[in-house]
Length: 119
Image (cartoon, rainbow, N blue to C red; front, top):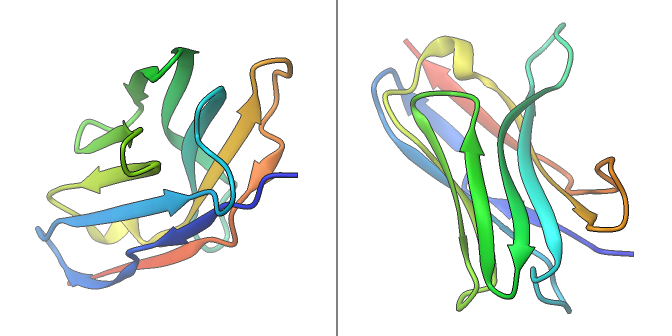
């Protein structure tokens, strides 16, 4: 079992930036493929960005949103989501998720962090 802990959410204004962090207490991020998902009220959960583990300390990052950037710091053992030019429609609970390379689906989830963009 892998525990994931997110932080960095909050209330911001339209156009602001915010960086979310995710750490796995007690283990390294190595060998895990990770992603950020979000779920807005009344909507289905959607993937925002993914960092696919390639090997060693290398991940291949893909963002589904142009204003968002996912990154991994192996030194800090932390997954990040940099969000720029935030809009009200970005308001959601953001979740960090991970899975081992031996499985296809995301199997480990954080508790979520609320991001609210106020106009």
